[in-house]
Image 1 (cartoon, helix red, strand yellow):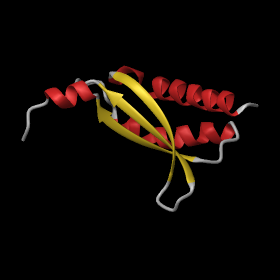
Image 2 (cartoon, helix red, strand yellow; image 1 turned 180 degrees about the vertical axis):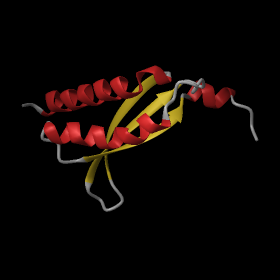
Image 3 (cartoon, one colour; image 1 turned 90 degrees about the horizontal axis):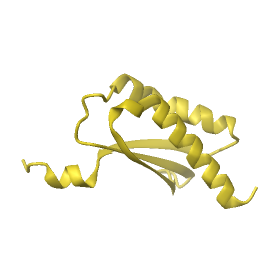
Length: 99
Protein backbone atom coordinates (compact mmCIF):
# COMPACT_ATOMS: atom_id res chain seq x y z
CA UNK A 1 0.00 0.00 0.00
CA UNK A 2 1.50 3.37 -0.96
CA UNK A 3 2.46 5.66 1.94
CA UNK A 4 -0.11 8.36 1.06
CA UNK A 5 -2.90 5.80 0.85
CA UNK A 6 -1.90 4.39 4.26
CA UNK A 7 -1.82 7.88 5.79
CA UNK A 8 -5.20 8.69 4.24
CA UNK A 9 -6.68 5.43 5.58
CA UNK A 10 -5.35 6.14 9.08
CA UNK A 11 -6.63 9.70 9.02
CA UNK A 12 -10.05 8.54 7.85
CA UNK A 13 -10.22 5.94 10.62
CA UNK A 14 -9.19 8.52 13.23
CA UNK A 15 -11.70 11.14 12.05
CA UNK A 16 -14.49 8.56 11.87
CA UNK A 17 -13.86 7.38 15.43
CA UNK A 18 -13.49 10.89 16.87
CA UNK A 19 -16.70 12.05 15.22
CA UNK A 20 -18.54 8.94 16.42
CA UNK A 21 -17.36 9.48 19.99
CA UNK A 22 -17.45 13.30 20.23
CA UNK A 23 -19.49 14.37 17.21
CA UNK A 24 -21.99 16.38 19.21
CA UNK A 25 -19.29 18.41 20.93
CA UNK A 26 -19.02 21.17 18.33
CA UNK A 27 -15.90 19.83 16.60
CA UNK A 28 -14.69 22.17 13.87
CA UNK A 29 -11.61 20.30 12.67
CA UNK A 30 -9.39 17.34 13.39
CA UNK A 31 -5.69 17.40 12.54
CA UNK A 32 -3.54 14.27 12.50
CA UNK A 33 0.18 15.00 12.79
CA UNK A 34 3.05 12.53 12.53
CA UNK A 35 5.45 13.33 15.35
CA UNK A 36 7.62 11.81 18.08
CA UNK A 37 6.83 11.23 21.73
CA UNK A 38 9.02 12.44 24.61
CA UNK A 39 11.31 9.41 24.13
CA UNK A 40 11.79 10.11 20.43
CA UNK A 41 9.58 7.22 19.32
CA UNK A 42 7.26 7.75 16.34
CA UNK A 43 3.79 8.85 17.43
CA UNK A 44 0.60 10.43 16.13
CA UNK A 45 -0.86 13.63 17.54
CA UNK A 46 -4.58 14.09 17.06
CA UNK A 47 -5.56 17.72 17.57
CA UNK A 48 -9.29 18.24 18.02
CA UNK A 49 -10.41 21.84 17.55
CA UNK A 50 -13.87 22.74 18.77
CA UNK A 51 -16.05 25.83 18.73
CA UNK A 52 -16.31 28.07 21.76
CA UNK A 53 -19.62 26.46 22.74
CA UNK A 54 -18.45 23.44 24.68
CA UNK A 55 -21.80 22.72 26.34
CA UNK A 56 -22.07 19.40 24.46
CA UNK A 57 -18.52 18.36 25.39
CA UNK A 58 -18.60 15.17 27.48
CA UNK A 59 -15.40 14.71 29.52
CA UNK A 60 -16.19 11.04 30.18
CA UNK A 61 -16.34 10.30 26.46
CA UNK A 62 -13.21 12.35 25.88
CA UNK A 63 -11.32 10.44 28.56
CA UNK A 64 -12.03 7.09 26.88
CA UNK A 65 -11.18 8.36 23.40
CA UNK A 66 -7.42 7.69 23.65
CA UNK A 67 -7.98 4.03 24.49
CA UNK A 68 -10.59 3.50 21.78
CA UNK A 69 -8.46 5.37 19.26
CA UNK A 70 -5.34 3.34 19.94
CA UNK A 71 -7.30 0.08 19.97
CA UNK A 72 -8.66 0.93 16.50
CA UNK A 73 -5.23 1.90 15.18
CA UNK A 74 -3.77 -1.37 16.53
CA UNK A 75 -6.51 -3.28 14.65
CA UNK A 76 -5.33 -1.51 11.50
CA UNK A 77 -1.72 -2.56 12.12
CA UNK A 78 -0.52 0.86 13.26
CA UNK A 79 2.35 0.67 15.74
CA UNK A 80 2.53 4.35 16.67
CA UNK A 81 0.71 5.54 19.79
CA UNK A 82 -1.81 8.33 19.26
CA UNK A 83 -2.00 11.25 21.69
CA UNK A 84 -5.02 13.55 21.75
CA UNK A 85 -5.06 17.29 22.38
CA UNK A 86 -8.17 19.46 22.62
CA UNK A 87 -8.43 23.16 21.93
CA UNK A 88 -10.67 25.96 20.80
CA UNK A 89 -10.58 27.13 17.21
CA UNK A 90 -8.26 30.06 16.40
CA UNK A 91 -11.27 32.35 15.89
CA UNK A 92 -12.63 31.53 19.34
CA UNK A 93 -9.24 32.07 20.97
CA UNK A 94 -8.82 35.44 19.22
CA UNK A 95 -12.25 36.64 20.35
CA UNK A 96 -11.89 35.47 23.96
CA UNK A 97 -11.40 38.17 26.57
CA UNK A 98 -7.95 38.43 28.12
CA UNK A 99 -7.53 37.67 31.80
